[in-house]
Amino acid sequence: MTSQPIPLNLLPDSATIAIDGSLSLGGCSVGELAEQYGTPLFIYDEDHIRERCRQAVAAFGFDRVIYASKAFLCSALARLVSEEGLLLDVASGGELFVVLNSGVSASRCVLHGNNKSSDELEMAITAGVRHIVVDSFDEIGRLEVLRERGLPAPQLMIRVTPGVEAHTHEFIATGQDDSKFGFNLANGDAAKAIARIKKNGCGKLIGVHCHIGSSVFAVDSFAKAAAVMATFAEPYGLEELTLGGGLGVAYTEGEQAPTITEWGSVLLDACQALGVQAKVSVEPGRAIVASSAITVYRVGTV
Image (cartoon, rainbow, N blue to C red; front, side, top):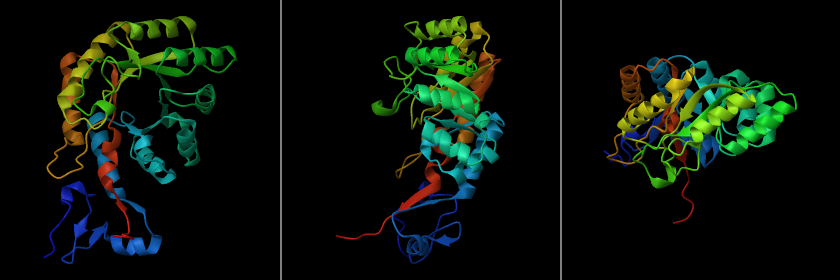
């Protein structure tokens, strides 16, 4: 029997390897797909994606899980995650355009990103996105100008850097005090941002958001962030608390990542222990789709 160079747990759920070493996904031969469509070829396991969506919704509830479009986006995927009860995180006008042209309502979209242009903000407000996650004082200024021009006041969250180390690679850690994303909690910027939004009326502040990093394996880091964020948000009486994800995914042999269910249990237990009254939303990040896909190449030259 041919040895298996890739452990099955790193492949999509439906992956099978035949005695001759050939790989199939969802009952389809990868070799035959490569012959039909050419290479390089991206192949996604739809049932795998739906199962991860359902695990997340089972843990947190309908419309309480936000899919990271940057992990993978096309029209079919936008429709799929929306059908399964997930909202979509879009970080540019281009991503919002793809979602809207897939037939998914703007009301199922959250606009993210740390460099939103005035045009992208206007596009999102005009389309009617669910809310905008504000990332900087510059962005507040752009929203103020749009409001002065007569655009409706959108629902807003502010992104807070909670000062929590995520135990991930330094290049993809985003929750520490020196992060380039969001409003720093320790130096008072987060409180100043809330005060400015409430004073100038550029939008209705509904909650606060944090994201501690990408590819995070230590679930206790999420619990620590939940404690910091809940403590900060509680005096403001805000309706929603988004404990952004970045849940790790196993990419190499020997890596063990928490399941979405395990991650959900840790977060929800932490919120219950803290007595959180706000509606809690999460962003599983790449964990919804990363292991659902393979890329097929053809060896041309050795």
